[in-house]
Image (cartoon, rainbow, N blue to C red):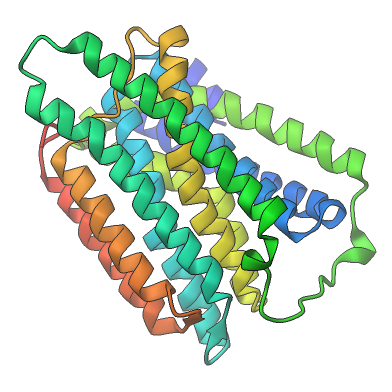
Length: 344
């Protein structure tokens, strides 16, 4: 339907929302394929696969926007993806799981590791933003580019060491507090079918992301929305649909370690892997280098989100009201971005 609408030159909002809807079942297929693959690899690798391929539509959307030179939208989608996972999806997981179970428990040690990594990530993003704010009016473009490239390399190195810590040296930090058996072994896919479906879904996500981003600017103009709001809310929620579905499904099954691990692990991956990869890719595919220079409102929103997310999730226990708190903060931040101009 999206391709037909695009070829018949339908209105851009119609194309945009049609493409957004089409990415949701693609994301669900990515989730199911990674869950099936995880039955062969174990929980730690399975959670990592889920977060990685869950972020794949997000990465494709950002790369397509990067090639189109929509840098405001790219930066907004990075911030939006973190906010959507940390506040909206985690809030929905706590709320939906909490309506079924009185209290749900997960490993507080892993939650603390995720929180400290998130603080490190947000501080890293604040550095180039502060540099741009202080020296943006001066002729320091080369220094700013070098700062962003250096930062990208440090973040990628940090992410590699984080994976080594999680999988190799300290896997006990990320283990569930209780034994959780999966009940779906009877209809388990073969390893080959899981990989094939993952590839098909990823290709589908790439095509639909091209359509989505192509109609994003026109949609914003037609509906009176800024590029920042489109990136922070629509592109982020659509791009993160895979891990959101997966985390909510795990919460409904009372598997909160997996649910929290998928969402907080995804936030860390976006900041320490996706953002620096986009900086390095911009040197090749973008019209100019991408600088991780976020407006003050976005950096402020990230700091508040990480603080409230860490406070609410740090004790290893969740209930439906904690979910309501997280969702309320997300709605407040989304409203703020709807009304403020792009540059602030």
